[in-house]
Length: 350
Ligand code: GLY
Image (cartoon, rainbow, N blue to C red; front, top):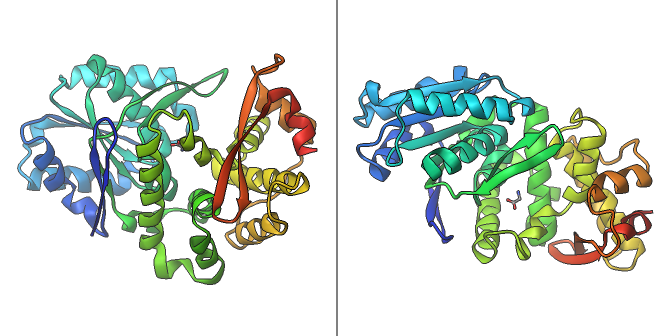
């Protein structure tokens, strides 16, 4: 078992252990012995893990009458105002008070939506993350970014609201499709490329199966250190956006048909090639990222022109003087922030 402590404004533990799902109840009861528990999950995860989590709660002594659950349709389209209203109605019907607990059981959409519901329910209710995808385990469940999408764009409404506990069971990854697993691996490559050159080399050389749990632990540890330094995303945390500026453009231009991880994979290669051309990054870095991503089954190019990518990225920052902070690499394992005028993004990536 690994237990990493995150020292943010509200500190919490991230516990990583195979089979942890069946012991989730013990951790939750220790955290809040008499609370009512509202478990929120989606239609993919519910048939796999909901009953196990509820059973672990009852085994830990939580009466069935104190546990309620809500299942929403799986998919990014559920990270919406509409689903959020339904979650609020569920929390009201379940009589969840500020001394109770909300649990997010699932991937990034579930964590973001549930976290935001918890952040705003009764002006702030505590929540626990039980992430079941690689992307959620190594990235989105830690750090307290919560939110929903609007028709105008992704994550436009949200709050920083740290979970009270994160329970990671690597066994849940065995039920992921190859595509969803690869999606999470794009974020793992991001951590390695921007923060840990030795991890990058390990990903290049070794079979993932041999060190998946260590990989999760290392990525969470990097995230923990970054978030402790910059909880509210005003400085160093922006390094976690390596590959995301152009990645978000790819997602938007594809109308979200290209997944987040695939888009970030493309974004990491494009921005690193551009940085190499500008003399800001050690030559050969983009090719190594590209080769690793291909070996993991991820895409490394797209049909969109630099003009389309730049316009989609700059969005509302078209006015002269607006800045855009790019996360770039000096070399593998060494990310840095590079502010540019938003208007010069096209010139930077051309
Ligand atoms: N996923 C990037 C962050 O939490 O800042």
